[in-house]
Amino acid sequence: MQAKLVLGNWKMNGRHAANVSLLQSMLDDADINREGVGIAAPYPYLAQLAAMFAGSKLAVAAQDVSRYALDGAFTGEVCASMLADMGCRYVLVGHSERRQYFGENDACLREKLQAAVAAGMVPVYCVGETLEEREAGRFAEVVGEQLKTLDAIAGQEYVVAYEPVWAIGTGRVASIEQIDAAHQLILERVLQCHGASASIRVLYGGSVKADNADAILSLASVGGALVGGASLEIKGFGKICQSAKKTL
Ligand code: 13P
Image 1: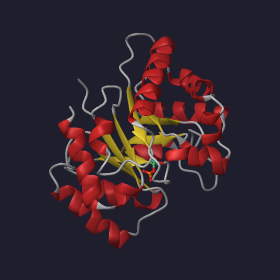
Image 2 (image 1 turned 180 degrees about the vertical axis):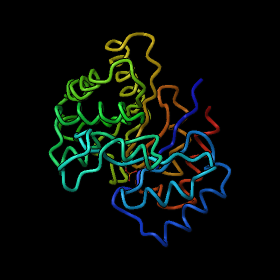
Image 3 (image 1 turned 180 degrees about the horizontal axis):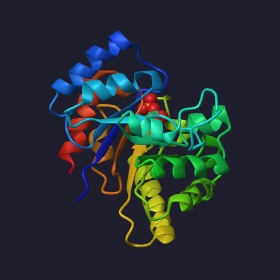
Image 4 (image 1 turned 30 degrees about the horizontal axis):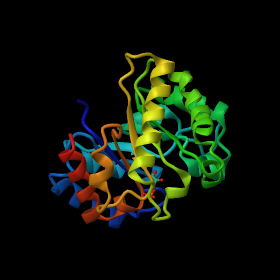
């Protein structure tokens, strides 16, 4: 059985000095400092993470990557090979905040997935429906459509993260039944497209906290967690990582 993966997504948070104490507490915590745990930090702090995590078990992850794979005149962009060069093992692709605020569409996400894989990183491809889509009974259609983008990297190593948009940063967590049903559907679709050989992990994200992590992570269909707000605070994140360890 694959280890459950816990990735903290700091989003646009963190400052150098505060990061030092948070990252040091993570390194000092045996539940956190182990294989299968990583932090996705903003670009300016990736070097800090890479330096502090050197020699530890913790993985460095990026929150985004340029769709342009080759060096050149793309002011403001950060390409996949730069992230790999900085020591990133994972990179988030298609987070709902990027789809919503930065208009990332299927064509763009295909290129980002391909660029990440070509640079030797594992993309964490995020999918999820809005509340409106869920209430209109369009969950399977919307998420099914988003999953088709993975055709761009069929046969390669990747992770899927299911993050219902209505559960992100709202404190409103999907029910255990909703999470299990969504994950079963995603696993089924991925297997249909990429064959029974695909060994795929589906992380759950959306208001994962210390008090709901045990229940969520004990589902067999849940391969780990993508944690936003709770990854900025050591106690809660430690408890989530402990739950992931327990449920292996
Ligand atoms: P929260 O855990 O803050 O709801 O964020 C979830 C998320 O978007 C992680 O990528």
